Length: 462
Image (cartoon, rainbow, N blue to C red; front, side, top):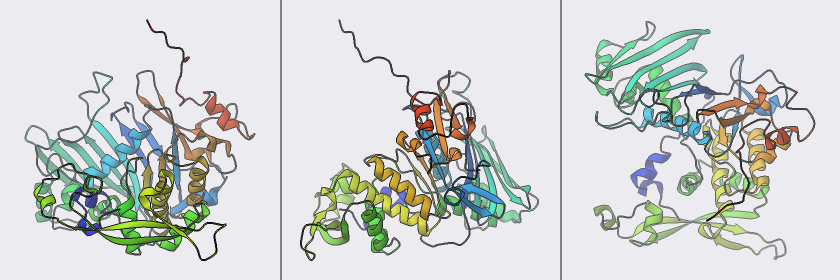
C-alpha cells in the first residue's frame, strides 16, 4: 500500500522529486568521481568510467556521449564488509544533497565525517572531485569542505578540449562569508553575482545557492540540472521504492507493459499489475506508510481518512484454465518479488531516459540468477544511462563472456585501515588467465585482494 504522490509526507516527496520525466536526446553521464578524507577513505581514490583499450563487449558496455569520448555504462564494486564499498556511493549521494538540499541556516552542520584513524586527517578537510557530461559538454566540479563550511569550490567546463573556469568560490571561515569569482568567459552581471553571493551561505555550495535565487547563468543551470535530473538518489536494501514506481506507472511515466515484460522474463509469472483505490483509516498502517511514530501530531489528527493505493499482482498458473488467474496483494509477495518489481521500474526509467543509478548491495533479496538477469537486461537495452553498484555476487566473475575487466572494481583495507580502490583491469595475465573461472578463482583465493581474512571458527570459553 502507498499514499499517492500528492499525499506523501515531506521526506517521501523529496526523496525522488528531482527525477526528470522528460526524455532528452543529449547524453548526460558521469566520467569519474574522486574522494579524499571521507569516512573510511584517507588517500585520494577515483572511480572512473573511462574504458581501457579492451575491445571485448564494446557494443554492450560502451556509449559515446561526446564524439570521440567513450564511457562505460556500468561499474560493479566488490569487497569485504567494512572495506568502503558503500562509502563510495554515500559520498556521491552526499555531493548530490549538498547541491540540491542546501542548508537553511549558517549554523547548520554538514554531515561530513573525515577519516578518523589518523590525527592528521581528523581535523583536515574532505575533498570531492566529479567530472560529468551535461548536454554534450564536459564539466569538472571540485569541492573542499568540513562539517561547518564549504571551504573551496570550483566548476570548470571544457570547450574544444580547453579547460575554462566557470567559477571559483572561497570562504572566509572567520567571517563566515563566501566570495565567488567567475571566469572571464562567463557572462553574469554584477547585480546577479551579488545576489548569488548573498544566497551562498558559508555552508552552502554555489550550485545550492543558485537554486535559491531568481537569476540565470547557463553553466550553473546546466550543472544543477545534471544533479537534479540525471543523478538519482542512492538505493540501499532498505530503500522502499514502492510508492515512487507505482505512481509513475499510474502516471504512465513508466510503462506497465514493459514492467510486465521484465517480470515475466525473470520467471515471476505475473500477468498483470493493478492499482486499486482504498481509504486508509487514521492510524491504519500509518507508521509504515508515513515513516513516523508520532500519531498525535497535528498533521495526523487532521487527516481522517487518507486516500491510498493498493498494488495487486495477477498470477497465471500453468495448470489452471486459460481464463483463470489469481490476485495477490503486494505486501504478501516475497521480498524478492517486491525488490524485482521496484528494480524493473528503475530499469524502465534507465532505458527510456538518462539516469545514473547507484545501488548498494545489488543482489539483496534476489536469487543470483535474477541479479545476473537484471545486469544482462541493463547491458543489452540501456543506451545512455549508467549503473554503479556494490555487490558480493562473486559467481558473476565466472562469466567470462559477459564481463569486462574495466567495469569491475575492488575495495580493500590498507594497512592504516583506510579504503583502497582498484580495477580488475589493473591485473596482468600472470594473475588473470583467459580460462573460464580464472577471475572467480583468483578472487576467491585472495589473489585479487578485497576478501575478508577469516580465522578458524573455534571459540574458547572459560
